[in-house]
Image (cartoon, rainbow, N blue to C red):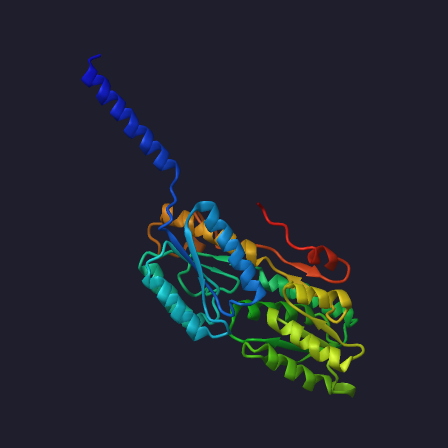
Length: 330
């Protein structure tokens, strides 16, 4: 082999090796993924952001969580639009108002941007799939706990935000269980409009009721209400009344341990967001053709319709395990 031939051979091998190395590392820092939600300063969403950040660090891509600091669906839509304008590799969104968000999700899909919902869904949209809690089962789990604590009899009120799909599913789960206990009456489903302080004020009003109108069970379907309703409990010190909460921030867990909150239901926002970014990354590198399609009705679909991240009931019997803190992969 002549000297020029050796040089050509070496150059060819170098190019092949370079291509091989580059091909093994499919991720680039320029790939950007967004997590869109509301009330993003809540511990729940900070935990989700940790999972999102963890996945981004593993893959070496760029991530950002955006959304209003309060429950404001219209501002969330604005943040979603701003994310779409940046033409990201994918968007993970918790939908505060499905009617407002559905057309925006559909526009993003039409623009070739993969969108997956977490925590709260927009099932009528063209989002690819949902990752999160089976909220119907979460409600049933809570309903069974409340029914047992009430011995199947009493007046119950709910604190929620109508129109948010995850909360609607939880409410339905409770109603499914209470349908088997004719002695349990749902007195009111109170719209707290995203303000936990409003929930506390309403709880004080409920706690003043006596006799046949006394409220025996206070049920919070979302995270922020539990602690403020518990504050109303502490001030009134009601007897024979239970409080059911949602989610497992440290303050809520402490209230479970001391007995102010009967029980709470644990979700996995960290897991939702971590899996969400990884799923979006896969969809970015291995695109679906077409992106806009009813994959849920396709028996040979390459993607799931729903990824259930699981729930647990937390009461005095197991609260210490949760207070010890989460175990996350290094």
